[in-house]
Image (tube, rainbow, N blue to C red):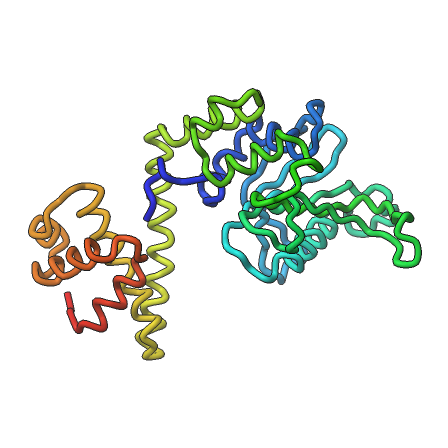
Length: 304
């Protein structure tokens, strides 16, 4: 588990909390669109839920906002390289579209313009571009645009065409990946400085530290459910995911709270030898996840 201070803007928690601040979100969109006059009409909503029908489960959009021109933005930072991002952007577009008109409405020109933005630390399309912008065009005449008000933008922090995009965008994408204080402080980009100011405040906030831990606890509960499923199905992977919640708690006590294995065993009412083995593995494999450490514990046949 990363410390809050170690997160970058490609980590979901920090990205969502930063974009939840109107000034920071506005600055991000101004950089992406090169428009200092872009103003958000309403505060951003992180993890906005959209339900297209009462009998269907709701879908969460990462960061949702509306500007003064009533254009809707959904922005997502995607750290993991997944092959479904293009189709996912189409799905998000359709979800937003389906929520824009009241039942029975027939004037489709009332629909807001929409923009889906995905920011990644990898090149999804392999052409070395910092930015890929997609609109509907005619195959027979590419100069003919359908002008349906829908745009999808994919940003890549590893672009190689600096001459085709603004220096501000490149600097922002580099900051997304490193979230380095020196980069922002030495920048002439006032919008990036605004973003960094809020990032710094989040990282220094005790309240945010508690919220971050709570998010991890939610993940622990999800893993615990995986553990129960793993027991029922007899799958080693499921067992490791379940045990990971325990490893997470032990790791936190040893690495963050700085308790000894003996103190941790007493606090958690677990066998000292078990805690010592976990501590040894954490020291030997510092880069491994809680699930990977749990798998090693299970393989070694060590029980709590």
